[in-house]
Length: 314
Length: 259
Image 1 (cartoon, rainbow over the protein chains, first blue to last red):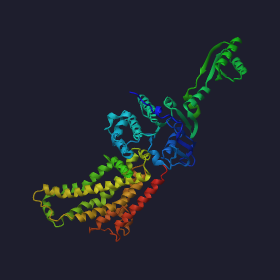
Image 2 (cartoon, rainbow over the protein chains, first blue to last red):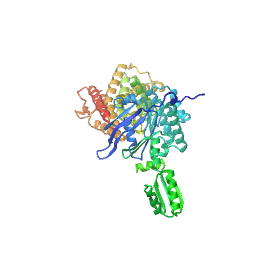
Image 3 (cartoon, chains in turn yellow, purple):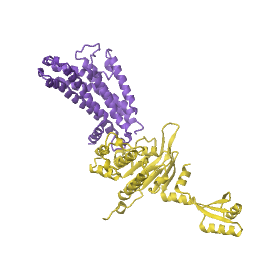
Image 4 (cartoon, chains in turn cyan, red):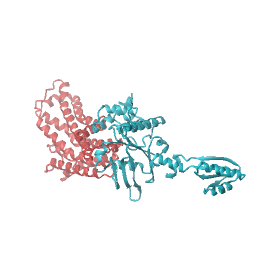
């Protein structure tokens, strides 16, 4: 059977599907929780919204979904002002904010029927989404008897019920076991690839989503630290490479590096130089050997994405 | 159409809920007590059923505890429990991210509470009828009541009691939407109810919106120290319902955080 992917029939455009302009928010006069947040989520992208706990991720997403009144700034979804088109926009959005929102006295199926009545989608769709999240066998079980992981899956099923164009998930893998995390990641990747759903997913761990997302926004203390593609972030990673020379004479390393216009930092016989081309490394090494310096080790230290993220938020 | 869908969705949430069971149990509680009491004192039952005013007496007996205690307290509890469904399950945020206007959300939920109250009235009336029929069927020698069933009077009284309960529903709904803690609406409701009981003998007791079901019962010639107001309490009840609902709606719209 030939599988036709959404991307094949509908080429991905770089049109923003969600845009916020300078969102400023505070819960009291003293504390500003968000300070000029401008998100730019492109159509059919998977946007990872990263930041440590308390950075302002959930507040931003609650503003985007209309759960909080916008104090300053504006929100545009599907190219239209959100405040003026709230009901219309929400019809195309699936969401899950923080902990699961589930009626514990109802079964999984009844929970979905509560929403199916609003969305007016087919009853068959309930079975489809339960199947998608791996809960088809528990459809008649009361949601109150579910584990946290199962509740999380049911919340994702709820978010998918209306076949949304934009899916907003706030820390959706909380409470899931490692296998569950992988399954959810796979599910989201497939939804994005095959149906072209734009996904905004927040997390406080880059390692949790770096294999999933195409774009990244990093927020800390209510301010955007970085926004761009994953490749752009990786470029930053390249820029943050460093070369370490372990030799018998650190002073000589610093001196020779200085001749090439490179400033090194030396400590305990190890000199760390910023990223330099390979031929330069070879040249410095040659100079050191010809000057009678013993070179024990030349190594390249890669700062992983997590390190860059940590540097940005610390 | 959207309102109807929203109402159906809200109605589904009451399935197996405490509010639903309260309405069912509350509707049959007093009639059950009457049945048990008549079965215990079965010797007097044939005489009771021969009375010309059998149905009027049964109606009065059934409403005695209902109008003073169970109806106001039931309205307080069931209204608070319906709003509590969203707080308890952390689902306000889910509800407010559905493609529904705030007006639809507010009034669909209120409509469910009002319909639950109607359901209670229907069940209570069935219960009253059963409390007449069951002793007749079980106690030998009991004649079928000679007085024809006064449908018109019962319907009219049902309607008046229902209207009199609406201000309680509206005020409890307002409070329940504002406070996450279930004890706040229930506690305040209880305080208002006690205040209403205490103010029955006050000549301006009718300004308290929780007094109307009590006054409606007491006005029917029951011996009491209560000051039966000269005003039309049912008009007051309706006015209170409309005004409190309007204020409640305004406060709900103005809420800065919706989940």
